[in-house]
Length: 295
Image 1: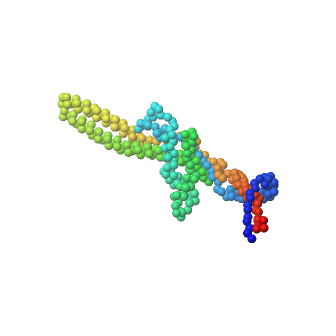
Image 2: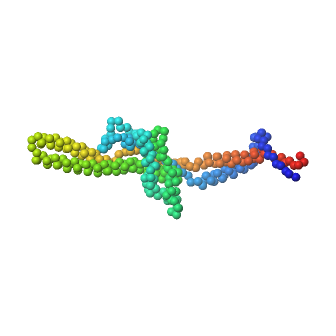
Image 3: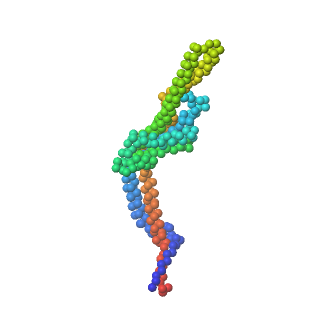
């Protein structure tokens, strides 16, 4: 005798209200258990607090200025989109990340064991998860830091903004120092040339003296130009300029941003109830008909 099984799904055969009422006890018990389990799990999750800084790039990032830092007539307060992109690049740079890792001992703070095979990679992954910077719709830059320690999240967010400004100034001073060395050599060469022309005047007479004086005047003017640029480069190598304009500094958060326990409990409970309802619905909608050789 051979048996055949045929499954037939009939969704129209189940009345939704009667279906819920007939399985109300199952739904009630399942919902309570899912809710309790969700609450327990949410309580075991360490809360995270978020602090953020809002800042704009200063026009110094892209504005053409004299070596002495004198602004041109069309100087604006805020930088453009190009300045914003450069600011984001510095904020996300390895210099900033290394600074934070050392200052706050993030490997220890994130509880990364020294015996880990790739501790630096794990720290980097943690920082990618908890530290974010992005451009806002207003053209500003938002730095957001999350951490289980609300005070540390606040301090790190503010430090990122300050460190980016420091990096820009370091880049400026380093570039000015290189320029200062080059201009210094040019000044020494030109100074020797002027002195040579001055010495040569002692042996000249008549029209030759007038021609030599004209040449000397030109060379002396050029020496003065080089000296002016030298002084400008010297000033740039020593001064500090603002490259970021902080609108809102970070403050310690009063409320956690994660986890949202009420949302977690509601979503988890509804998901379990939906799954149970689907299983019961399929079980009742499927009718198995058994036929044999006598049919």
